[in-house]
Each structure stands twice: as structure tokens, then as C-alpha cells.
Image 1: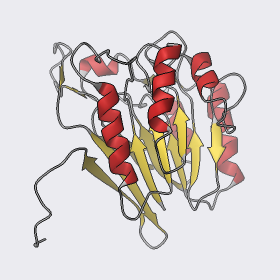
Image 2 (image 1 turned 90 degrees about the vertical axis):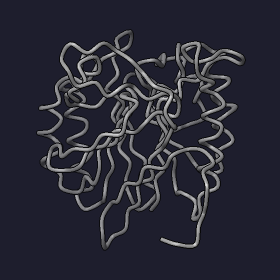
Image 3 (image 1 turned 60 degrees about the vertical axis):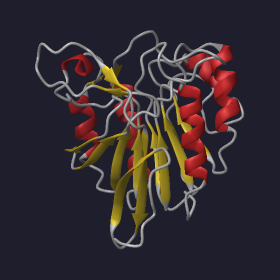
Length: 264
């Protein structure tokens, strides 16, 4: 099974640049074109939050116009920049989304089961795994203990070492790790939010964060570091699961580059 993961596109209304600098809409369109051109095509596309910048109807209308161009089915979760109820209305035709409350859900029509855990807190930039979410996840994972599973969430549940990112992480990471550690079928936890690719062991499995299709948040590791971003080449992740190997995750830059050349 091939799973493409796009994250943090921060779509704006027509003619408006993200942070006054980047045409995030054009960059998402380029990402979608590249995903559509993959051979073989992915089985599913995950969009792991911050799909728009301010949660307005105009942004969601533009977003739907873009992602409806995907030739592959998609699954979505909100991020801290999304408005939960406006998001729910914008994706009213995605019948896997719950009608109220946090947008936890399960998608199990492919070889790998996707479990979405909505850790966003409306009106806040950090996330949290409360007892109700942990209980839902534990029961959901226990229902199919032999099924390879990916958990998708927005804010990552660990300290990255980048001080201005760690203010807005997902709190209660230890609670999440304790739940995940009981379920060995979890192949990956995939997150967005930090606009960087990061990889670590977490709860007995592997957790990775996706880059943004817009900008990259600067990697500054000193405790006194000031927030900053760069316009680096955008990218997305491709998670490739095979029963004899498990899951391999690839990072794919978005754009046109020299090649291919006849050597490897």
C-alpha cells in the first residue's frame, strides 16, 4: 500500500499570499500534480492539518477546488489553523468525519488501517491527548490487533528541541505513548504542524512529521532562538507498506529537477 502525506498547505483566498510571501495555493496545486503523476499511484492521500490559514469559507472553497483535483481518494484532519466547524461543513461529503466533537475516525478499506486522532483544541495552537481521546484510541486499536495501522494527527506529541515549536506541541505525549506501546500493529504515527521532516521512536513505534507544501520553519536549536522560516523546496512524504518489510517512508521534494540520468 502506498500512502502519500501532504501537510500544512495553509491555503489562502485567491490572490492572497501566505504570510505575504508565498503563493501557498500554487504550491499545493504543484504538490497535487506531482502526487497524481506518481507511478504506481498511491492508494490514499493523507492531508494532516492546517489545510487553510484562517478558517474562512473563502479559503475552504479554494481548498476544495484544489484538492478535488486529486486523482486519488483523500483523508483529512484539521490543524490549529483550521476552524473545526467550518472544516466540517467544507468536507460534508466526506462521510467518515463525525458529525460533532473531535474528528477521530477510522478508515479501513485498504491493507493498512488509518486511525485519525484529532488532538486540536479550538482557539489554541497547541494540542492535547485527553483521557477521552486516549480511551477512544486504545479501544480502536484493540479492535483490530493484527491489522497494520497508521495513526494520523496534527500536532506532534514530543519536544522537537526547536523552542518556538515546542510551545505549540501536542501535550500529554506520555499518555499517548503509553496507549500506543500496548498495540504492536502501529506501523507509523504521522503528524504535520512543524513544517519540517523529523523522525523518532515513540511508544514502541516510529513517529514522523511531514514537511509543509508552503514554507519550512527554521531549524534553530538554541533555547533563546527567535522564530523564523525559510522558503525551502516544499516536499511531501510517501509511506510504502509491504507485508514482508513493513513501512518505508520517503521524502519527495516538489518541483522539476534535472534528470533522470541513466545511472543509479
